[in-house]
View 1: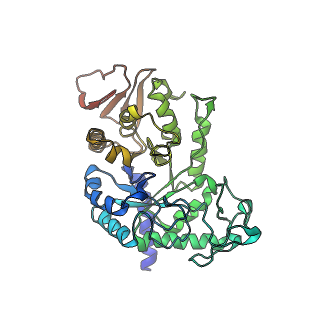
View 2: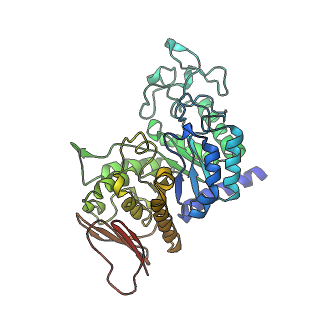
View 3: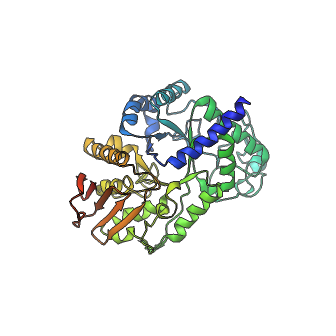
Length: 410
């Protein structure tokens, strides 16, 4: 009975976190973090993360992987990695718990590195380690004896066949172990395009994280090298993915990132869609939109799709004042100097003080080539861009400002 009661409580917790809408996330690593004593490094920063207002910190994959960054997992039950030992990881999670900052595990379950050769001479068996699956656990399109993939294929590695009952049962037990034994409260699903969202629904339902986010990273609509104004089909695909998780998971708002990083180059008209709303997932389903400026793939040393460096603060002034669930990138917060960091902390403080949350209403006032301005909720307004704008009415007071951005409150 106790377990049942606990399960019901966790379901309520998940609903409560999404309903509350007050999440502010920190991505707690970059592509090079495995070179440093990472779990120890983060442990020293936990009090600061809590004080700065972060509710959850996304950590890199905490289990054994063939590549040092963690994205080609092999032994899922071994917590000794290039980021540190199991002991150091558990000490970090304990410290986070003390400071009431939730830990988000990066869940890489689209593919897995085999240990031994099987069918067709491929490394598509997992002998000699926990979850010692055979070729049936690998999709037929990546050299296994399972069914075809239910999503996009991640090339070069055995892709896991989530249609197999034994695979899903093992994954749910492993996620429950991460959740209850190891002590992660939140999950981030890597390469969510690779398998059907209905399985994410089953996994979230089975392991009961307090918060989940999926990486459904799809290419935006371009004509040649120029980004289309209308990204509705792009955000629709992300919305469909969220819907197919039973609305249990949020998703990274790649649409907003793609548009925002073009807008700050003097095309702020992009930030109002044809209906007068924000043009990303944020404009359609803000309570499930996780906004961000850069991550370990788009920025860092990989730089696959980077936000223009000299416009970072305009980006944060937008996502930290707007609805959705904003995410701050480790590099910007800890590596780009005190000025950027202090500005971000100020914006987080303003967001919290004026009760801005994931569902706050937005009224866009201007969206021209050189300036964007909006009123968020009842008591906050902001502008970004090199054009000048300020709110009319003496009831508005400047809260903070920086290069090409300003925020006011009532």
